[in-house]
Image 1 (cartoon, rainbow, N blue to C red):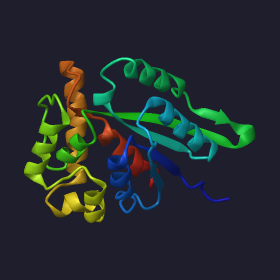
Image 2: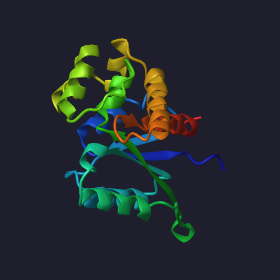
Image 3: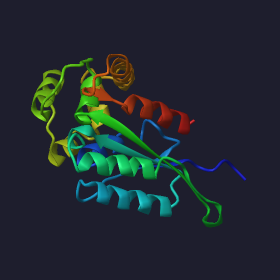
Length: 203
């Protein structure tokens, strides 16, 4: 029997993550990546999507989390509870289910990782607008489904315009190192770690 094919369900909180991870399917060719997102961006819907993915037999479920919506209660507590619920792998041999659920956080939102394709920053962003403005200084970007479709793949679009996934990964890792040493709770992305995991799974 050959090696079981690794399958990863990537759950974002909206269309941004869906279109971005769809554009990475060509990068991680040997890995079956299925991006998806709940219809409503709340913790209950995300939990339901995770349960659905587990039942469908995915070996990995990666949740892409925008921390700007987890700063306040009750979202903060609900999110911590969800993380605790899936802290251990789901192992149900009789049903043939083994699934690891992991969470990857970015503050404020996934667009920070897009900016990291082009340059590093640790400046605090009070809202998404200044972050989007900084990103637009590097590359034209609109947070609309029409724009995502027009780019014919966000990843390729960023790289064609001078960005690089390798840079984004290094910059994201740097933001986490800085966060740990300085104790700051803003402007960081764990998506660099996710890219390394996706690379390992696709070997």
